[in-house]
Length: 131
Image (tube, rainbow, N blue to C red; front, top):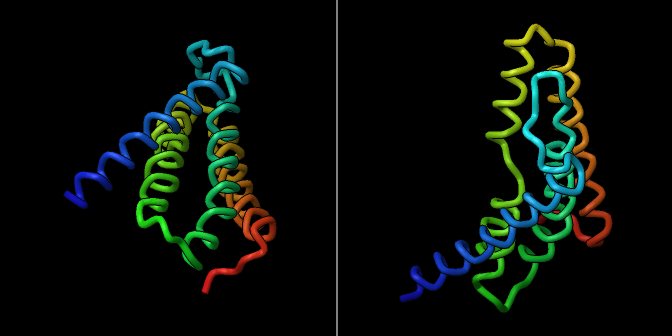
């Protein structure tokens, strides 16, 4: 029964995260399909925001948590549904196939640098360091 409950928390969190991702797409890109000429700013935004959130949450949840399903719900569920590596990969691949290696490189570097900085900022916000 415990594993089923954990799976239910992950699924519920995934729904919330996926809807949040869709909301960012609508706010940032108007939910229009991307063309190879478009820079995938909404994917960059969700991935950096997800890194910020995990930077805040992970140290807090690792340090203490009376709720055993907090990590599966918040990190695996919500943030797993919110962020998207697969979209990053396909959008970068489309840019490469379209002869836009420089845009793909900028996108990948911006995502990596932005994500790392966001995790660090999140840790500073939570005032925790990983143990």
